[in-house]
Length: 202
Image (cartoon, rainbow, N blue to C red; front, side, top):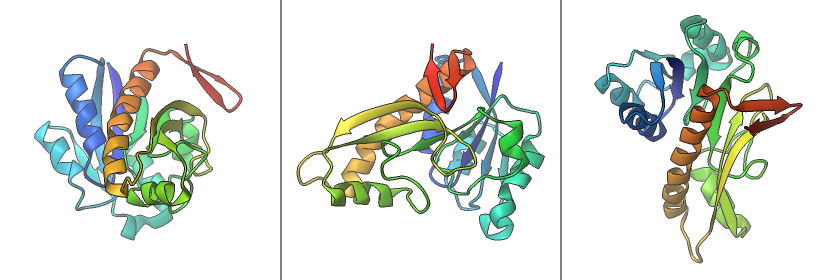
């Protein structure tokens, strides 16, 4: 069984989608643990309802050292780390041990509207304010540079005239679910190849 650790900070909607797909037999994986940097994250309750072990590492306490604390919990227990709305920056030994085995879902078409401070509704508001006509989401591998790891999958959608950030966020979230499912499935089936900083699904 392909083992996953899921890291969250908020509602855990991407987590719930993957839980549902595992339960429906669409992917042959197990979520071994959920780790949150926010004690109030609603995603914790989603995990507990499924009997998934949960850990809380309050970012207010651990700050920049949170990656080391995550590594202490995960060790060698999983095959893939999934960041589903996880807002803390990971550093240290974790990135070395899990090189090309950590993925993040970002609510824009990287390299646009990403980087430090670009998360949640802020991304969608920036997209609308810019006047671009197309947005989407990106699953990429995590490395030492924020939102600069190899891009694995992107899904795009057109922005409606007079669209608000809130409606755009909901539409992009649906694409995030599909992106994340495809990414986890392709990685779990060993169908991803790397060439320098480029990732390809075979």
